[in-house]
Length: 338
Picture 1 (cartoon, rainbow, N blue to C red):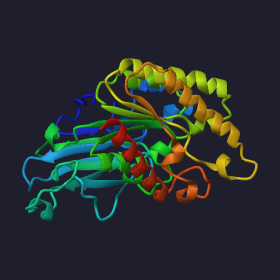
Picture 2 (spheres, helix red, strand yellow; picture 1 turned 60 degrees about the vertical axis):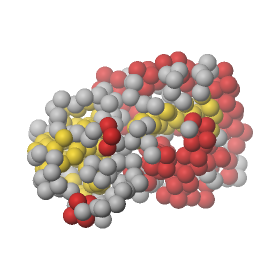
Picture 3 (tube, rainbow, N blue to C red; picture 1 turned 180 degrees about the vertical axis):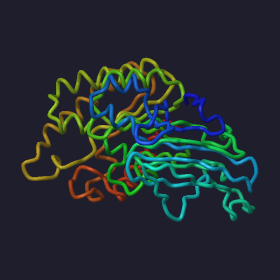
Picture 4 (tube, helix red, strand yellow; picture 1 turned 45 degrees about the vertical axis):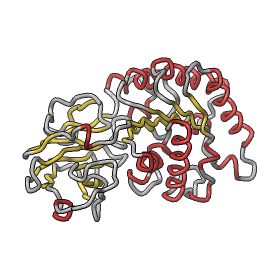
């Protein structure tokens, strides 16, 4: 994870760069990709990676009674959730364009735990978890705290690329999307690079993922956005092949799973173009079969869920669908990569 020098007492997870916020003085907006890379993506993806899907501000208080003040703002009305290790808050916290200071300390009952907790994170790791939208900025962090140590975090970093489904657009909260579910079941730490409505397998995204050396396993969900935007199958093949091969060539030691289209409305509605959806799936199977990588696999999206847990658009999984995908994907990844 890139070092963020402006805030040495915390770690900013799933954050690549800070840029000045344009809605509040002194705020540092969280970007999932550096701005110079984002600007090379398609216009919608450029906007999406400047918002904090799966991003977290993390720290460990030096003492249980230390009070840590974190000042944040958001471009519009937003919600965040303050987790302590695996423990979620009773309710979310609201923030908005006016900077808001949160005073955080280890919860009383967490301080007095006298049993081992079977969780990925040490219970004293504070995780301020942001939703997929809107944009968020950090203004200040004060108090006696430090970034989490390696032994307080999961051993495995899991990078996920995909569409709004990967971002968790229809899930109730970021910790309820399929990436978060799979990571929890596997004991992994997720990096979410979903780009809602815009996962077009852009070459600069592939190059950026390929250049990163901080992930251990990746899933690439390719790509309902391209099917919905009527990319010809031949263009999908060209883009997806280059995307997969760029990442695979740079990460010969890291397992990669390519997820074919999840089931969606063309598969189940009258006059839906199921044949075209299947052509996309078959194309991705062929790309993976041709790719020179010792540990790359296809995961069939239709094996992970049906549409019964979806929202009414029959495109985006709701909470039930996300949980089902997450559990089944965790089983697939555990079987193939454990």
